[in-house]
Length: 250
Image 1 (cartoon, rainbow, N blue to C red):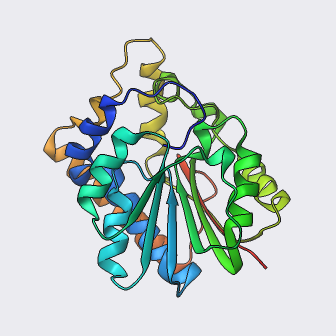
Image 2: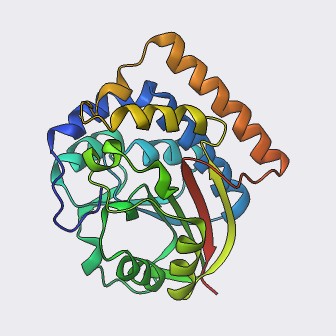
């Protein structure tokens, strides 16, 4: 996470590092990101991930793009120790992204489930746009739909859930051209909504989603594979638990 002072328990990184590789959500998001990177962004030399956490996304990018220069920035040093162990060849730094002042340095920047943690998200988007080279790409994922807000978001230290028009507007005001937008985790929205209704009673363990029965974890993963196949076919979902946006700096 690349937050600016919100509370985020450092021990969560150790729990995530041991659980995310087998979790349906993280695996499905990685498949989606790699597809979008290949088809919506294209060739690149330098890739920076803001809020890289334990390095789970960058590790998969390294395997797909072994010749790329990879950079990771994270607000919490507790996450970086896992990231450095996962991708020794990448360059990592501790960073408050609201203070980032790099200019025209990277071909692609990714911010995956980061912006929702930051009050000054428009400042962050301006910083990221400035850090991109001309023709560079920005990839973003965020949680979507305010009506899905629940204790899950509060426990995750979210500031907001985005609407599609809100995210597009903020990215465009940063001077970037939006190239692609689609919801994802769309086929599972009814289940998400019911789960979040249950979470509103205040009795919610944020790590419970990492302790799913094997059959349920596999079933959710299978649904997400169907969803990715539909996205690859050209379908764009109007509704979904999350939103993927790809933009370009002209």
